[in-house]
Length: 339
Ligand code: AHM
Ligand code: MG
Image (cartoon, protein in one colour):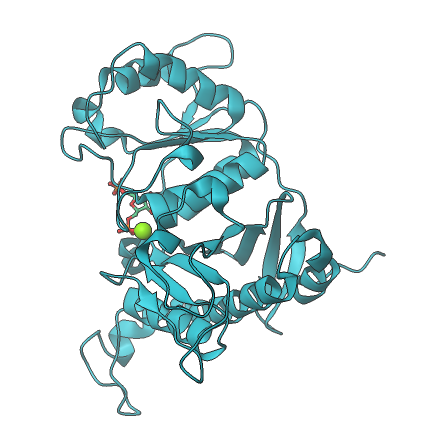
C-alpha cells in the first residue's frame, strides 16, 4: 500500500517547482498549516461556548473569551508575525494593512499575505462549516523597507499562492502555488494533514448552482435569465440548487462535484458582497488552477485592478461550461453598476 504523504513532506518535495524564494514560501505555507490547526481546535469547541462563556466574558483561567472570527484573526496574525515570514498582512478583520517589522527593525521578507481568517462566521452558531481563505503575493516595493498599499493592491494574476481551509465534517487545507490544486485532510488524532485530494479539477460540466436566490428580485436581468435557464426542463436540467452560505464550503463542494457559485451585484449590494482581495482573487486563482472559470460576469476576476483593500466585486466561478454560459447571459445586458 502506498503511504499518503503529509503536507510537510509534500511541501519539501515540491519546493523546487517554485521559481523564487522557495524556502520562504514553504515556511509561509507551514505557518498557515500551524495556525489552521489551532483555529480548527477552537472551532470544534464552538458548541461549548455557551457552557464555558460567551464572547466578552472571562473564562475559568481568567482569559477573555473572544468571538471566533477575532480569535482566528489573532492566531493567523500572530503566527505569521512571530515566525518573521512575511513583511505585511491585510485581513478582513483589520481596517488597514499591518506592517511587520523584523527583529532589528528591517524586514527582508518578500511576501505579503491577504486573509479572511474566518469566512462565513455567522454559520458557527448553527454548526455549519466555516473557512479561512488566504492569498500570497511577492511585494513589489523594495525589500527591507516598510510595505506599502501598492504591495497589496496587485492584480490577482500576480498571486504566487492561494488556498483555503474548510473546517467541516473533516478539516481540509486546499492550496495552489500555480502548479495545480491539492487538498490535505487533517487527522485530528495526531494533528497531521495528509494529501487526500491530489490534483483537484472542476468537472467541465456540472449540475449544481449555488446562489442566494432569496435575493432574486434584486438581481440584474442577466442573472435572472440564467437562473431560469438553470431551472428549465431540458438536457441535463433543471440543475440542483445547493447553497450553504459559506463560500469555502460551497466552492469546495462544487469543485468536487461540478457546479457554479454566484454572488452577483444586486440593488441591495450594487458592488456585490464578496471582497476582491481576500475572497474572490484566491478563489479565482484556485478555480483556474483546477480548470474552471472565474468572472465578474464581464471580466476575468484575476485581471481586475484593485483600487482599495476591502473592495467588493461580483463573482461567478466554477465549472468552465457553466460559467461561460452564465457570462453569455450577462453579456446580453450592459453592466448595471460601476464597481
Ligand atoms: P463574511 O465574510 O462576512 O463571513 O461573508 C461572506 C459570506 C460567504 O461565506 C458566503 O458565501 C456569503 O457571505 C453569504 O452571503 P449571503 O448570506 O448574503 O448569501
Ligand atoms: Mg468573508
